[in-house]
Image 1 (tube, rainbow, N blue to C red):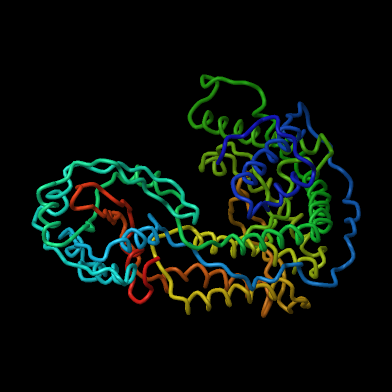
Image 2: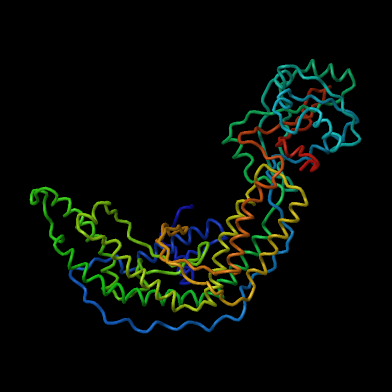
Length: 520
């Protein structure tokens, strides 16, 4: 994550979205805003303040607030029937190689023996066929390479100087001079080869190559991501009143439940307030005292929330998060409590302080309109869809056939109607009490109290299933997948009479040859 700036000011909507856990699709800037937003909320919250004395319990909870009118449509997701394709990593530009070859009626072909030995699809015979595809009017004369391979001909490593061409592909600068075996080149010239194409693997340090070739690819998911981002923006605007209402319901219920519990716990832990020394205790009494002090410190943020009387600003107040599904969660204090403390004090005070949050989640689950929860859950699944697409749309060394890409685009296009569908709550749609932890970017670990399930035949279940299917597309349909660490290939066209390079390019093997797919 990028560095955070402590003085960044965020509007209330950004703060709310940080607490909803919803910043899915705008990259690092949103992740930064999320972290800053939460830091701002926590810093300004009175919930961290300690209280000196007991807090009186409040009266019975007031009526829970009412929410917005029920929705009359699905989410406003744009159509996803678009022209896009997962990017395949590309080290060079095969069109530049084709233009260089086409200048000659005949070229010699010198392929390093290591290309054949790799056991991949690309070998000397296919390199010759590749030249025929790229420059069909250029004759190819194969030259047998010796055991020394490229080193017999190229005595000096060529410089690595990449640039981006007008087509958006990587262009490699051809050096003016390079130390070569001049005598051998002249010999080939006398045999009728005015130029020789030399192809072979090159050893480049992985970090260096990663830096040189970063982001170079053919294909893009940008049109798809742009529409998903617009759908997210419109959907969040539609849901914002309900999400605010859900947080208000949770805060109201939690404040009442917490106020009823904190005084009792403060009274039980009051004996651990005074500072004492180890010499004041015999046997296990010191360990018990240490646990009591830790529990008392853990209690202070909760007591501060009760004293402040502003539950919406309390860090531990449960909220509705949209992360994979609609979840009610609470951000708990990070103080470490040894595992043997519940036994030493005959009570687990962490669990006792979770009880108000669980009760608030149960009350909210019964109070919130399921028609709105359907849409909130549906929007929450967008993080699963986006996660699968983000993995698929990261440039990688693999290729796809057109028929598989057509099926992929149709599969993604079918997600649009699932987001926009109007449906009634299923008979088994409900909040499920479910203690777990989940992570929100910029927020950290959140304790899950309940998770909403859209139920049988719901769009949200279908979207989650579709996301899982998308996540396996590259594994199931990727062609010519490179092995980790497979080096790039160098292709150098050399004028045999002047012994000077005419063209220099670097390519991945699958970029040059991948069965019936042709050059990339």
